[in-house]
Image 1 (cartoon, rainbow, N blue to C red):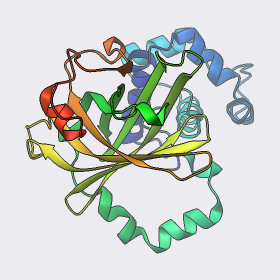
Image 2 (cartoon, rainbow, N blue to C red):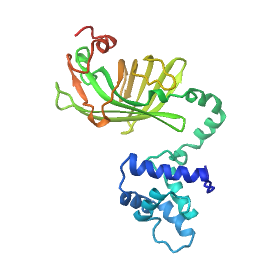
Image 3 (cartoon, rainbow, N blue to C red):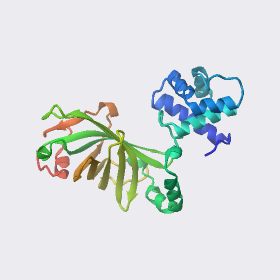
Image 4 (cartoon, rainbow, N blue to C red):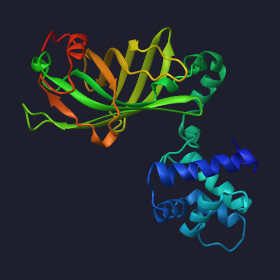
Length: 283
């Protein structure tokens, strides 16, 4: 949305600032440097002719964060609001990557907007949280029936949109030369009674699709889904691309405390029900 200097936009700007500083842990000096190194931000501030050689300093960011932005100069707020709209580093709720998308995609979205928005209409905040994801380990196909991969999954809802991040970082214990470090980010939507996760790898070489048709408990306001079960397909390199069963179990552990890797049962987190859902039989 173009900058209009409304109270709502002031709140959005402060929220983006808080997300960068608190949720993502950016030091104020680093954020100020990122803004001041942004060519479009510098060009915009120069057009106002206030004599500034930079957009903002870390002290001003600290005051904005502590006291709010209502009394800040409007043109400064506009420049930083627009910076947050176009930057993914740090990525905040203001991020609007439209400038980098093909014009034809925007036209398509406008033409079919009613159909496109339907899968995103449901409130999926009952999925929000951190999960362990269990699935057959894929790095050595002939061993996939006896080894289980554990990765991290985080689901978040903001502004009516639910997104996810899946992260796997490990060394294959049966082939130490295989080292995996993959992060996929994407959208969560509904199709019928299915949850669909579509993510694109940060390395730009692949994507993952998860479909969950079995979950417990049923999602509703105030009730958090504890487990998601379904199948997933990773698409990377030459095919064929096979699908695997997966189980995602909610955990109270912090994201950074979830051990990732390939494990053979028995394992403290690989329960009988998870083995059954993955087709591994009993412990």
